[in-house]
Image (cartoon, rainbow, N blue to C red; front, side, top):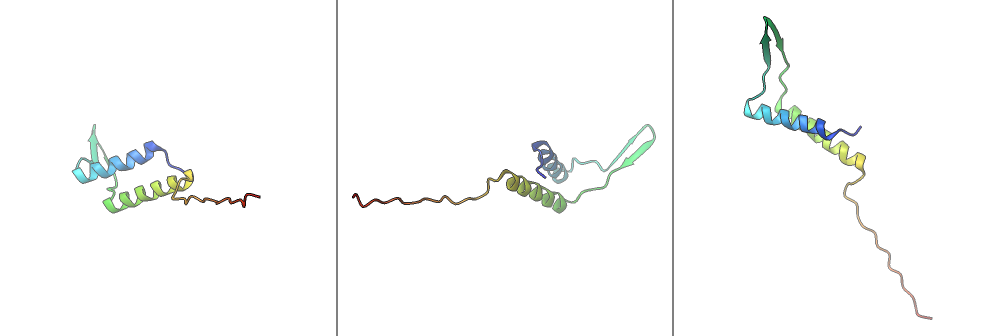
Length: 76
């Protein structure tokens, strides 16, 4: 499954927010509290690596070698 650029950007943003401390884990509004599971930095980086690798494999543009064939003629 290929991931969209938006999904990859979300993971990159989550990594940035986690490393800078901008990620909220609990929100309280009108007396209701919602607590989110805190993602770990290694898990997010591993997920990003998987997403990028799957997109590269799906696009078919990995490292490919160029094949060249020599054509010769004796001139007869």
